[in-house]
Amino acid sequence: MSAGTIDPAVADELTEIVGRAHVLCDPEITASYSIDWTRRFAGTTTLVVRPADTAETAAVMGVMAAARIAVVPQGGNTGLVGGSVPLAGEAVLSLRRLDTCEPVDQLASQVTVGAGVTLADAQAHVAAAGLSVGVDLAARDSATIGGMVATNAGGINVLRYGAMRAQVVGIEAVLSDGTVVSHLAGLEKDNTGYDLGSLLAGSEGTLGIITRVRLRLHPQLPERATALLAFASTDDAVAAAASLRRNVQSLHALEAVFGATMSLVSEHLGTPPPVGTEGNAWLLAEAAARTDPSEELAAGVEKLADLVLGAAVALEPGARQRLWAFRENVTEAISAAGIPHKLDVTLPAARLAEFVDGVTNVVLAADPDARPLLFGHLGDGNVHVNVLGPDGAEPRDEVDDEVLRFVASLGGSISAEHGIGTAKLAQLHLNRSEAELAAFAAIKRALDPAQLLNPNVLLP
Ligand code: FAD
Ligand code: 2HG
Ligand code: ZN
Image (tube, rainbow, N blue to C red):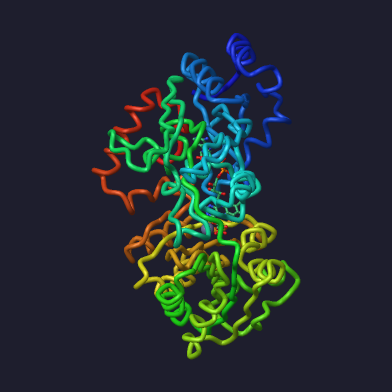
């Protein structure tokens, strides 16, 4: 059921739990919770509730369950698949006030944080103890740890540490009826049944509301070397990426920008890339270690002499950041140009170049006026296909279907790291069999029988 007109008795109960300031019904205030980062997905809601901790979240869900009000859990609202906003009038449960960072457990190299802690705050908190969070991404100032677990976020260091699921050693969550499940001891070896942390990772708010997360941490690697490399072809960039992975043990990130995307981001930044504008594919490779990794990276780059058109290397933070800008600002640059359809996909390494070189024709066959822009995390085979329509408008919907069918035909995944949300619901069957979807539905029925948690997300 949508939040609709809120029964005053329900509003009073919620106010009793979280306080008047945290039950928001004024449309001018709830509007910002109802539109996503891309501006592509916008809905409305008559109710936003902002609990402060697990106990308040559980009590709120008790009230929602009794009143049968469907809920969209929301963290930083940086999700890119239309899963974090109330598209069917649901209430929004904002977790941002769950922002406590508990003391770092130095002996275990772990920390427990509230679901609403931003990635940047978690990073700063653990850095003081000489440790780091294994996942990093450009939305770090807004994306929350709870949202990152819920989407199983990937980002730039997956090739070294895995995605968000691999960082979770404990979880606390509230189920749709208000029950609290908590397993936060963080024991590295713990075979005592189902792993609820793994199940909730990637569940996109459909199975439970994550309230606290215990994260596995990694040693800080302060010494860095970064290279931006230009290539004439996708094939050359893919071959170079494989060589760097084989030869540079301290490789920490291996990102790519393809074709016209480099011109777009360069114009947005107001500066050309330091490797010249010739080329069709660019790699951004970063090595990180306790001791200076620049020689190891340089030796890895030397092995690419036959492939590379131009190379720029940086060691100092400012100079490295100037190289990273050509990759980290792509999403912003595209957003400034219009409202894209975002198709975040993974390809098997052997089909990566075929996909990158073939997808433009697939897009143009579906919408001749569309403008495809490609970039991604090449070290993981993860390509972000963003497609703009004419004058920054959205492209035709057929583009999504055709591109995702192309991905599936090459043995790839239609969602690498952003999730299914509402954007890719219609295409989930391309990757998941009927038997798998039936198992998904059975899990959903078991944990959320009344279908209150993000009922329009992930499950067809
Ligand atoms: P939200 O957007 O608020 O929510 C996302 C989903 O999680 C929704 O389905 C929501 O219902 C659910 N959810 C949120 N909090 C909870 C909770 N506590 N309990 C249960 N469910 C919850 N993603 C990547 O994977 N890699 C990247 O490199 C990357 N880079 C990005 C760069 C930019 C500039 C932007 C804008 C986004 C990027 N993203 C990236 C996407 C986004 O940042 C991630 O999906 C992130 O994990 C979302 O976190 P959030 O707190 O904003 O979640
Ligand atoms: C990135 O890798 C993010 O920069 C965003 O995952 C991708 O904008 C996108 O499509
Ligand atoms: Zn990404």
